[in-house]
Image (cartoon, rainbow, N blue to C red):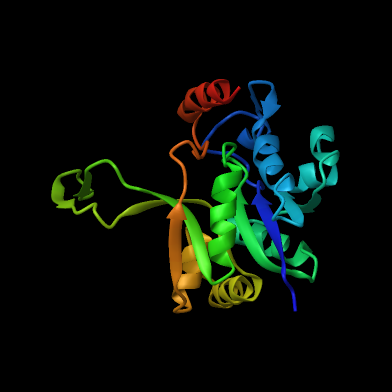
Length: 225
């Protein structure tokens, strides 16, 4: 019976929303690439036996040296995020029974967050998340507010998101058959009728998506030392 835990780090995006010639996951953040910070957290975690990094094809063929020296397996991604996760799942060793999926553009994930998701994922689906702190408004296309949304039960999803490997394969297999996608792994698993719980993430576990996110990331990197 497969009992090990593996991680799939998804970093195959082109970074169109970020702009520039270099995908954001390869940019330097206080002297260390964004992706390397994310990968190290999993590669150095005692509970993770294998880490697969999914890159754009050109980078998968010729990975940067700083990634080649890490104890990871590198594979090429696909056209969409779901395709990249699927490729990453296929690359994991047969003895990996639990999988954590993480965004390569989240460089500040901590060992504690990884541990919490990993422990919860062994019994079913689990994701890192934080309670929503801001007041939320539902807005029409013309930007008029239609209602204020009750936030007491709302959480903001992060990664990693962890699941039994068989469950995640079923979820992605069904999505591929139906030609559907999801915003994250949890959504696909929920469509199977399976339960997914949240565990406490971290306010600093931010995702770098747009250029305006980078100054905050640099400040967090500086505070971390």
